[in-house]
Image (cartoon, rainbow, N blue to C red; front, side, top):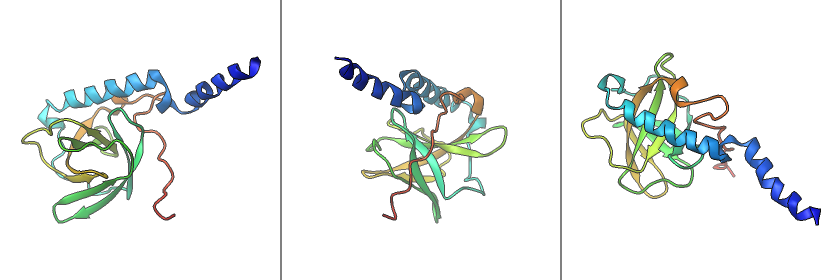
Length: 163
């Protein structure tokens, strides 16, 4: 009779190892996404042009989903990002590249399933399995939107594109 209780404990232990699976971190992520949207009201926080130095891969997450890989390239119309995960929204939606306001380092991309902001500088586009969305950028106070126990972007999943 003790074995069924052990099976119930295994998913709980798995959630403890990956903060993206915990309810507490889920609420934290939703709150952070709201804080980021609220910061867009200050036009001084908008990023007008793509940062000169970007890694080839950035973490990204659709609000309400986990961290996924996003490939980064430059095209004639700005950045071209390729999202490699689940939950990518159909139109409407938009991507928001988050830049740490203290270091100017790009931390990742949040993807929203909402109408894109009008009149904001466009950095390029982000494409998922079902659509291509506009990409904007914002400077954020990084400690306000992430926490050590619940980082906004978790570890990137392994690259499976070469398999």
